[in-house]
Image 1 (cartoon, rainbow, N blue to C red):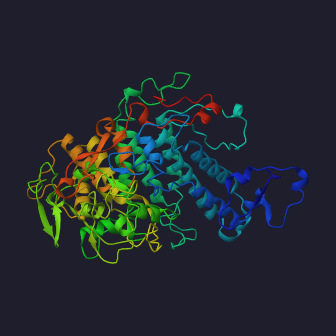
Image 2: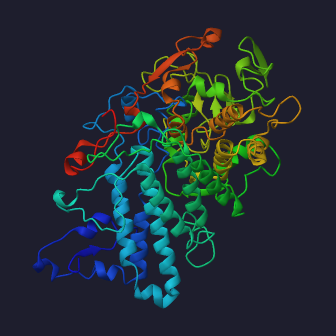
Length: 596
């Protein structure tokens, strides 16, 4: 590697450039703006640029219509446009030769980049001269955290993966030297947990490269980020999909090694509970609450109040303005196409804290006039999170190019309805409102304003629910289960379990049902639902036809449940994505995922 060259970008260093080689004659004529790879790791600025590139592999989950499948391919939302990959996946048009949302090679590039940084940053003369060894250790811990996180992303999409460890694998390595089998899922979990623990032991409590937090430092790895990833990973590992799942008894390496354990281990739930509690006990995070006590504003503020105390892991660079535009009604100049399903609408509680099947407040007949607008009673008396998350027919909206608040119409002849629009209409009669920035509009008729904000990947609300779920499986009846479940409900502005007319769940199974539904509502549209229904092994039951209102009708006939779309889930294939055939051809010891 000593003779290899790299051009330093003002933004970041592209990993692939680090491995480009040329003839000796060319290398003998190094331009003034180029330095060798060895020199990169002797200078502070270039090393930091390299580390910035390691961060760049953190996924941007804001492109829900084409870039990621974790929402549009569940029973949460339906993407109206058939030209995007979400539609193809919902139709089952995926295979090793048509590997939609293929991230296998991408995450391994991030892993390789992190490993190279860890193995070469020691001895950086400029950093040592300015900051001593402490900053080098921190930068190594940041790269170690990122490497562990990329393994986690691989595992949640593909299941058991190939663990490379500290080995540096050049991009141009011959395939004969790349033959590694997959490790078991438990081995992968243990490795990633170990790496996260090592990183957490060194990482700062606040995002910093100089001991003091600043806006420029936000987004850097912290101890809280490492422990939050560990919490989610161990929750997944304890769940039925990975904990004694005999459905995958035949999922083996070529040598017969079973890749997913066949024996249930309740202690995995304790590990998950302990990991979540470790984040809580840091004392660094709090549920975000509006200063005026408004629960709707509290829920909205989680995502719009920058770097608030609930946020643990954010991605600064993202395409949320595009998400805003695709989610906004046509009446606001948006593209009108990220539709909430009826299944998701039905999951929200009533304002008495009960489900729609329990509450006497719920009815699907008649209308109520609310602020001079006729509202279908299905949408009346719902909890604040519903109004913060869903735009329904005759919901009042102001944003984009709308200069005044007005009702949104999704019926056939409505301003955001299907009539005259071949593609830009919601097939469910709803749009997502959660995390939609009303001051952003790049769509038709928009004014191009940008509402810049970070993309929240991990937050304390999730950790509370992780803790409650894991405790309920390991220690049913533990007082902390109700405590942390009720903290979520208190912030949401609905009655807590154990209050008047709302009984405490009477059994472990009843509590499990309540926790699952709270998780579905609190974390809706945050890329959790796919992984939750899969790890709980309920995906085959809840996937299939998704419903909405009848967007082909007008007036009162609009309010009728109809099939809006079909979201296919085929067991066992849909539990894990297929590894692309190109990768399989290169890695002969890697076995394909079940069903593919």
